Length: 320
Image (cartoon, rainbow, N blue to C red):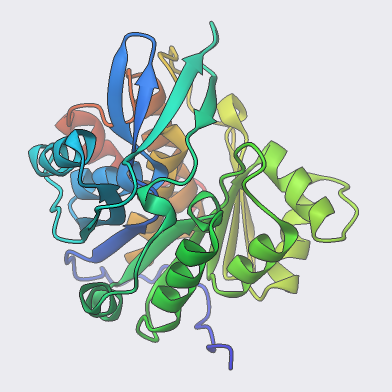
């Protein structure tokens, strides 16, 4: 039976008490191998890192090999302030890697290794306890490319608490997705986030004619009973569509270093304010600020910058 969904958060005149939330990035942990070296990455880890910078408890739930890259991944998580407690160790499969090339405009292309540790998630007792304690869970499509990890992710999402926010971050890479995976993931989500190009592909795969961003977002929201659909548009900002309103943001101007991780940063800021019952316009403002800041830095997990982070935490749009 599908879980009933609470109405979209609305701002009130009363300040909401601040607290720290448990926010899980569930999915692939891997090494992005750039021409100049390797960086720890994967959308869930990037998301959890950005969540922790904002002040919530960002938690990575993933799986690495028992190899040198896996051991280094665990140490690197701890070094950047993320616990490795929910990092499963696989003795049969290697830690995931991705060959990344970045073009002169900062846009990346990826070559993703297959049959690696994160293709073999197990729904362990530790993960079941984590699911029950989560305030929000962000999961993607890439980590569902294998039957075992797909089944584990769905099991995790089905045992989260009634009030837990489930975020489906569409991540179309190579041929690692299907209409069935996309549809089932949306049924399990409260919020869906995808970029402009992905939205066109997803809507058509799911059997609907694509006309424009807004109508497609409304169709996804209504078809899958979603609280919120977020469409990112790169330098042109983003579109947020809830059940009662729409928010358009023109984007923030920055000098782009590379865009790796900027979408994950966008999602982290969005969920930070969603959990605090921010207005749709404030969610959009904060998310664009966070995504732009990361795009202006090299790599997906730049060092903390308290000046920018405070701007993101305190973001209030003039549209309110």
